[in-house]
Each structure stands twice: as structure tokens, then as C-alpha cells.
Length: 527
Image (tube, rainbow, N blue to C red; front, side):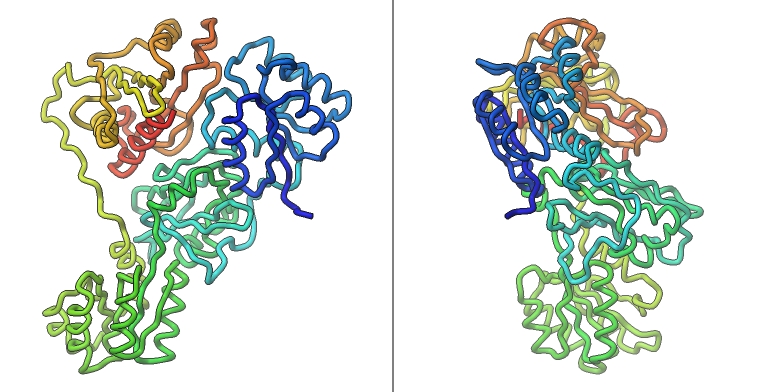
């Protein structure tokens, strides 16, 4: 019998049941579906489930009636309400009957995962809602790590991912503290996950390599932040994330596969162990033929070449490698008394380093060798005109959903910054883009009125949520609930933590801004 916890999804819309199955099967749950409320109630009362996901509005029996009948037989089973029509009476009745939470349709994988994890954590159901703050080294040596620039993740058996970072420029520095995410926090690929404070320098922001919900953090880093420098893929892990989009996001990541050319067995073994401790998959080669075969293999496009171990033959072997594999990035590792630097520099090499394993420079070299090429950032206009401001961006996506993005005054511009990047991304995906110039009015009444002109409305604003600059908080609940009507269920707010200068989105670094624009455009396209 499987040890996987069981979930029951009861919703008359088959598409909602199927979406929940896709999300939670990947996270290690068994998922059963019922599109008939009476059948679902029979299953819920007769079976054993870690939790039930329940629609409110169904024919024959609504969710409140379902809950009333369920509580007579099973008063303690966790229930998460799903509704496209949130209302105060329904919410009050659901709470009275012991519903743990409610979520508004359409929901994202992150939103429903966060709600379910919180519900199971509160009830202690089947151990899926763990809230660890300390623990052993998460990364299992020898298992493959995937990298998004300096950030890495490793898949766990239960569908979650252990995440961390091999941060350059920490070697020899004093790591003063690490700012960790909070348990239950939703993180997105490419947006901030953690920050490292280094003596005498600006904090280093670590992006999240995956999207999902934080279910554990490495509290040991609070006591010993230096583990990020001396054991970044072991004791220096940062968090454990319940992933929500891994199948798509892994395409933006890559394993760090390196060939290590070293003719000295003992020396080569030590270097290989150090590369592996930095997250690399290492293929060793001790002769010219072995090196040539290794660099010809797929995925191995970085070669660490130990010059001292090959002596006089080294430069000639490098020439041969360049002829056989011209795309390989070749890092020559030399000793202090090297005599062949000029001969090596005559060849096509990526980097020439003197004893980088001894002084930690190898971390910076690997970061440069494996880092993704930076996307070309749009050049800001020298003197943006008032008409350059954007009040809104609209598309009709491939689901024939008319989606409109409204922005807080001053956040988006037509020809530069995040506004430009959102428009460019949508155009790249072949969506006709309608841009509304000027500044939007965002009072509750104005927002609900705007919701009547489209199928889905997204409202972009900056708000101090106490998170790292560029962090995104998505909310579909009662931000505009003071105005009655079903139109409020169409509204999603996107709150971004402003940059350190307080100037809206302009203070964000280029990498974070690009990731933020990607997420906003993707959400518009996927409704």
C-alpha cells in the first residue's frame, strides 16, 4: 500500500479537478477526483484523506451543504474551499463549519499549494506540511544539481526541491548574516530568495532557482552564515521549496558539467572533489585521448585543464582540444612557478588562473563559465516624455481571455524599463498588444469598473511587504472587496517590493527586473 497522502478534489468542473491532479501528483500526493457532489461526499465520509479540496457552487448540493453533511461524520478532516464567487456569507458559513481556508478561482499553482501546505501544517496531516528551521545538510553528494546562474536546486523524492547558491566573491570575505525566506512564502524563479550580508560590501541577492512555496529553511545559517562560503552545496543549503512549475522551469536551468584534465591521479582526485563540492558533475581525463573524448560528449562544454600535470605537452594538447571542440570553454590551472603562460595564452582559452583551488578563485571562474548570457536591457530614454507613461496593457490570449494589466502611476513606461519588457515579451509570443497611455486611477470603484471591461484584471503596484526588492506577492482576495459585485472576483493584485531607493521599480537590478517582467507577461498569457 502506498504511503503517499491522499487528497480528494470535489468540483463539478472537470478542468479544475484535472489541474489539481497535475499540481499535487508532482508533489507526492495521490489525488482522487469527483465532479459529482454526492459521490464526492460518499468518498469523503468512507475514505481516509489528508485533505479535501471543495468547490462552493455545484449543482444538486453546494459546498456549504457538503460541509454540513461531512462534519456530522468527520468533524476534523481538513477542507480547502475553492470558489469563483467569494462572498462574506459563504466565507462565514465555511469557517463556522471548520473549513481551513478558501481560494479564489482561477488560482495559480503557487496559491493553491500555499493554501494546502498551510492547511496540512496546521493539522499535522501526514507530515507534508513540515516547518523545519534547522536540519542536516540537504544536498546529497553525488546527486545532480541544476543551476540558474549561481542558484542551484536538487530534486527530492517527495517532489520538493532543496535550493541554495554558490555565491561568487564570498571566498576570503566575512559573511555577516543571511536573510532567509519565511516558511509559507511564495517564491518565483529568478526573483529574490535570500540575501547575504558581507562585511564592507552591499548585500548579495540570491535568486530562487524554482517557483513554489517555502516549506523549510536552514536555520543553522543564522548561527553560522559562513557555511554559504565553505560548504554551499551541503550545510549551506538555504531552503526547501514545494515546487509548482518544475517541468517548465527546469528548461531554463542546467547542470554544471565539467571535464577535469589532470594527469596526476591523487592531485586530480582532490581537484575533482572540490569541483563536486561546488555542484559540478565532473568527468575526469588523464591523457590527451581521454580529454578529446570527454569534451566531445554532450553537455560537457567547460574544461578545467591542469597545466602542471601535463608539463611540456600541455600547450600542444590545448591546441588539439581547440581543433576538436572549438566551443569548449577552457580554463587553464597553473602553479606559481609556471613557465608556459605565454604559450597557453597564444591558444584560445577562457581563463588562465594560478592555483585557483587554493585561494577559492575557482568559484568565480565557474560562475563566469556557466552563467547564462545576460539579456540585452532596453536603453532608457534620455528624457522620457509624459506620454511615455503607461496606464495599462491589454491582450486577448490564446484561451480567448481578454486580460488587462493596470499599473500604479509611474510604474510602467512604454519605451523602457519593465513596461517595455512586458510589451516586448507579449509581442514575442505573437499577442497583439494594446497599450493605454497616461496614468490609471486605482480607487476600488475605478478598479471594479475596469474589471467590467475584460475577463481578467491585474493591478500592479509597489508595496513594502518586508521582503527583498523585486519580490512579488500575488493576491486574489478582498483587496477591493469594499465594492460589492462579482466583478471583484476577476481582480488579481500584484504587489512588488520596491527597490532600496524607494523609487518604484526603477531601483531593481536588471536581472530581477527582467524576471519580474517575464512573470507578469506569462501570467497575462496563461489565464
